[in-house]
Image (tube, rainbow, N blue to C red):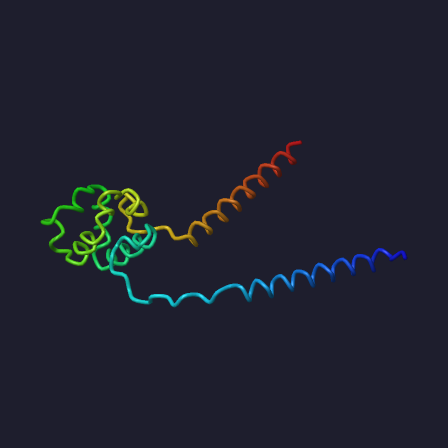
Length: 152
């Protein structure tokens, strides 16, 4: 017996669908329920990844003058200087909990510029600058093409 191409395709599709559904049902039955999770808060710094730690450091630094992160970036030895950190008790406590910040200040303070502005570029700002540069490029190319066409 010969089947038309659409009929054969439908038969293969339905067969594979039923096999996949059966396999999925068996898989669901064999998967044990997840163990209850421990919801207690972890206060150790070792559980925090570097990005989370950087965000937490930024939150602490927002309480202080905007020049502080730039100063700490320029002179990372101040991160371990208790005399310098005395007016910044929350920062000093955070740095004691997370000594890895003092070991890699270039990473944790990379977003703070060395210029005199207090402005930090956000992802939205970078996107706007990208589009601005693209439009400028097309404008310059269009003007050059118009001039060249006029001369020719």
